[in-house]
Length: 87
Image 1 (cartoon, rainbow, N blue to C red):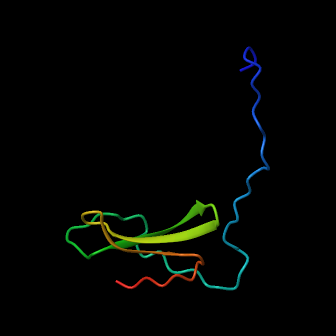
Image 2 (cartoon, rainbow, N blue to C red; image 1 turned 60 degrees about the vertical axis):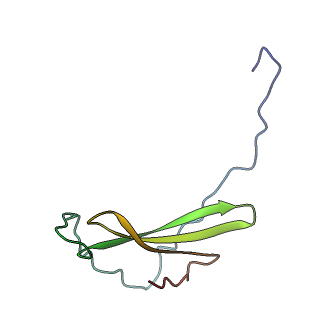
């Protein structure tokens, strides 16, 4: 880059907003306790929330997966974290 006279353009530093951990809500019990062994379908479902950056801001994606065959049971996207997932 130096030989070609090319310089990078630095943008404002990206800061990810995370979930507020200082709240009065009681966390859910850890029922799996890292035991991911499954012998039949619909025995154990897991979910995750992901942030998807788009030009207008953020979308929140929640996905529910069956651990038996790693099949996606359901998903929802929303502009807020209060998305309701109907299966």
